Amino acid sequence: MNAWLNSLEGTESGHLLAMALALLAAFAHAVLGALQKGRHDPWLTRGAIDISYGLMATPIALFVVPFPGAHMWPIFGTVFVIHLVYKVMQAMAYSRGAYTVVYPVVRGIVPFFSVIGAYLLFGETFTGWQWLGVAVLMAGILGLAVYNLIYLETERDTLKMAIGLAVITGLMVALYTDYDAYGIRSAADPFTFLAWFFMLDGIVMPIIAALRWRNMTHRPDPGPLMVRGFIGACLAFVSFPSLMLAMRLDKVGETAVLRETSIVFAALIGWLVLKETVGPGRIALMTLIALGAVIVEFGG
Image (cartoon, rainbow, N blue to C red; front, top):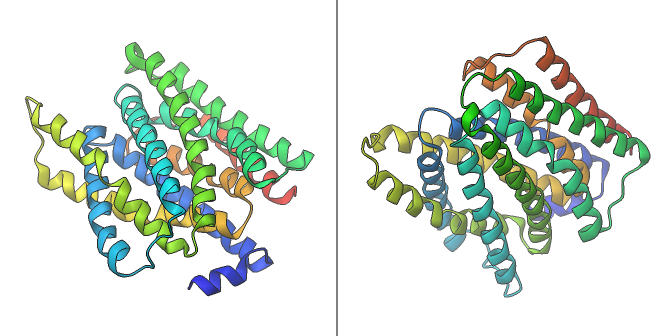
């Protein structure tokens, strides 16, 4: 598998596969975000997801994939810290604001900073048309956040704090997007990076969630929570590896921007599953997001 992936790097077939993987990552990430914002406390859901994929990844990391080289340990340490800060900020934001407000703010600031990071780390550049596409996509996403903010009727007392936390979360997403791409490109085997990432990433949040659950007056039944965690882990195994493999195969900046079409999937999930209102204004903004992604993809 590793040899096949390496043979696709820099080819047209690799580019097409990267596009498909980025879109798959976008859909899975939107579902995962809705899952964390859904029925249970977001801290508990995140803990259930992390312990599930950590336990599932451990035998693969220890007994299946090649052991990481010495140069990978500082990278894993940095990745661990970045993702931990991201998850804490995300849980805090979801605890204070509606999914259809928080998620667009998080995703809206990611493309610009991801593209800048791709330039600094990998020397990637965008054409004028592609920068226009980034601007169109960001305008659609942030416009969606503003639209939701204007018409939202609940959680308004904590909304300013939620938006501030969402901005910090978005910056952390941009940081981990580029640094994780650096990490998987540094690994001799991409599946070694993925397996060890999931095993190490699943350590801290379950502890935080367990302490939070213990201190609750009305503790939710852990059974349904762990079922949700298992489903979330399966989604994470689709979303994150798809994104990372896409970034190994193709340009980091373009892949990161294409992944932000997750906001379209998120809006549809918010409407169909979470029963959050979607009207003509949101549909127009979602169309703008998709248009921006198309311009970036075909403007190179």
